[in-house]
Image (cartoon, rainbow, N blue to C red; front, side, top):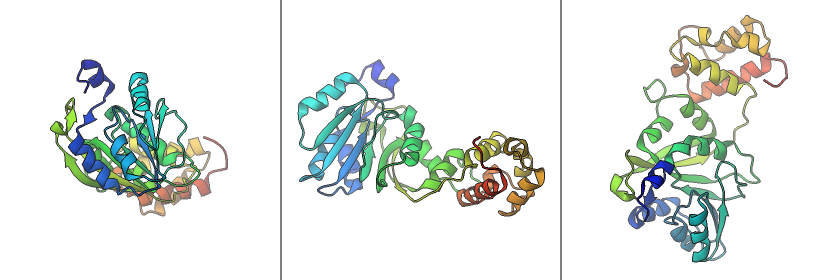
Length: 267
């Protein structure tokens, strides 16, 4: 397996076979399913996944590195379709699940794309290898030090849980940080038009009270300041509470209240 400095700079850390088998087992893949391997690398997950979905299943192995993509094609594993390109830009086909050990530095962007991308059918589950610190952020309780904007954005779109931890020795080359395997179960979510503006304002001054951090939204949304106060009242946040005190559900409700108050236009 590659262990050179270039591989580390890419953020790629390949799973050893034993660890890959644990990740694939967590997916509970069934014959006939279609699965996206986002950042297939050397195929550590691709091969056992292809074996799990036979007969009739398909593994879409996305790999940006031309030589690694060509090597995956040359294996000619049954049911594997190699898509060379950036996972953040390549067309993603309808799939039943995602199982991936992607480059760590682009995982938040991958999460946003997978959870926000309109697909022909919803993804049933996602099994991802991520840095342990990120796993703790995604599952952080309201008000904790790890709780943040990414926690809110993800929780509104999926139920997330940590399945198990991985040792640094489960990778080659070894990453500099500890890792965890998480499962995300996407859920139906109609995003309020004002959610992005709300989160921008709330987390820009996350330690200020929401009454103060959201006050600029009145001018941005072209509504009277009282509309912001009334929206905050719908989640009992007109006084004292900060960005870190609201649950993802409350952020969704607050965004809906702001959507009703603001005129229909693009921000």
